[in-house]
Length: 286
Ligand code: PAF
Image (cartoon, rainbow, N blue to C red; front, side, top):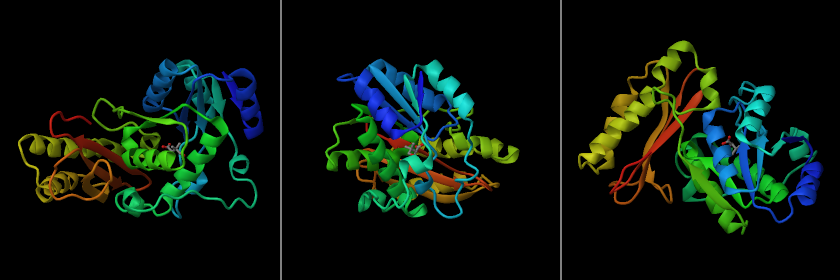
């Protein structure tokens, strides 16, 4: 595995060694877990070269959010990324990605960011779209891999990539969970013990909604009542949002008619966790 820190070196390395090869890109903020590793492994199967980036992107964190305390362990990330098959490990500094006086931002507006994290974390998707655009331009990947846990992020990036004519397929990969159902997240390591023991209630609440849906309840007001009732069992955290939206355009819906996304964010003391499931008319999956 080659470890690269500068944009110039990465561009040159790819040009010299991997010309005309299929490139898979796995963007991460590090503190790699099995969710990230599943993306790398899928990318390995589908491409000739896999570039994994580890970059805690400052522009996607708002005031008072957890940029400073976001978990970091570069040595472990290198070991895990290499074992999963990564060919190039790119770990740029903030100055490398945002040179002094950088003022170019990429922003997706409209319905896609009008709910969920789009409103709960103003400016977040601007930061995500900007950094991913930069990485797309540096790496020029054929495929980029993202986890379904960040469903709105996937929707924003798909839309942005299409509208900016990037020649990249956005590959969405299933959420990887702990044995108790908690979605794997780097942030889980910052949960206090009592919060960690309650965190699986998020997925349990989502599953309760799925059961009601499978029993024929399509009314989202009712489904949201079920969701909130179950989320209130989390006494060490509070609901940031709990919504049901159309999976494609992320607009709130009254009835589940096509694929719907049930999405939740819960704020604990130092950590905010998100999770979601998809309700499908025929087959239900998460
Ligand atoms: O999902 C993440 O970890 C980040 O939002 C991403 C896609 C790496 C951009 O910084």
